[in-house]
Image (cartoon, rainbow, N blue to C red; front, side, top):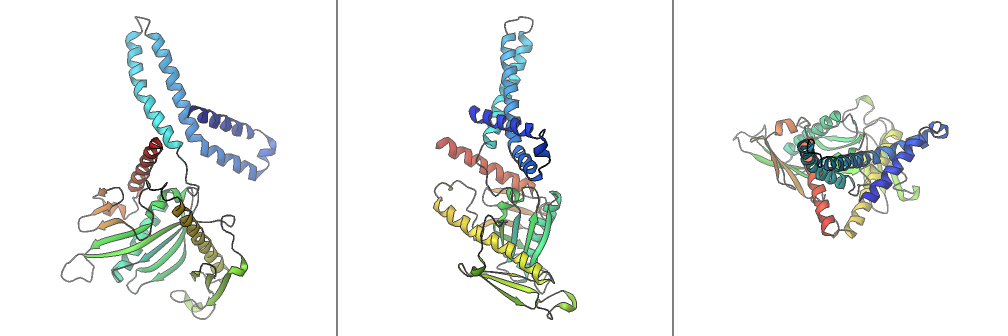
Length: 354
């Protein structure tokens, strides 16, 4: 571990030195690449330096034990440093765990109403609002790509892109079935109903990640439907893209411009094809991935939202919070952090048994 950390520190210092070179400062692409590499190395390098400082201080304190006048102070310092050293070592182990290559990516968020009819569509709208609030806290940008409203003001389906710093690293835990238990507004007997929605979080694929040949896609245009003013149903601005080899279909009608709808549709298509390839690769590595939190399968029930009891339960890690009102306002960080910690602990355990 120490050898690897020393190599990382050396690389970090080399990158730092590059920022003094005119050829780097004048080349925006090279500058951004070096800055990104430094950001990735910085947490581990800083922890490594902290560990070295603790070990140096420990050695110095142990030398002081020979001096009767300094012995008591040295013993106190040794006791404090001896507690700090394993904590830093554990933090470094977590930082050195293999990183998900998609963690830096933006995401395509897809929410669909499932069982429960109108109640499910209303909950789909509330969950989308919850994610929007969560995104605001992180200063991420949310842009709706496609939306299908229900007659009661909910969403049958909503697809959006969320752009910002390390969005996928925080949002990837949300894929799956979200179940809601509450008394619908239309329920006269006061009975609690159970509804469900599905959430899919796809890392946004760049063109370099997924190459789509023009011969492999069919693009159909049709009239938009729903809100949109006089142009609705009069211009063929909506776009349906079919990827012929996989029969993957994407529709987009949010924009009045056919070109914009086509661009948005291609972003969603690339991400869906990228996810399909990831699932294929993951199936091959299933045995190695068995320690992960859940399977990420959209058919898996990951969370229950119980409104009468103000209770949220994440079934993957057995976490229960009686703060559902706060969670629905976008206060998701406590749940996300708990999932990350659990996953990291599982990875560390798997590594130690390997």
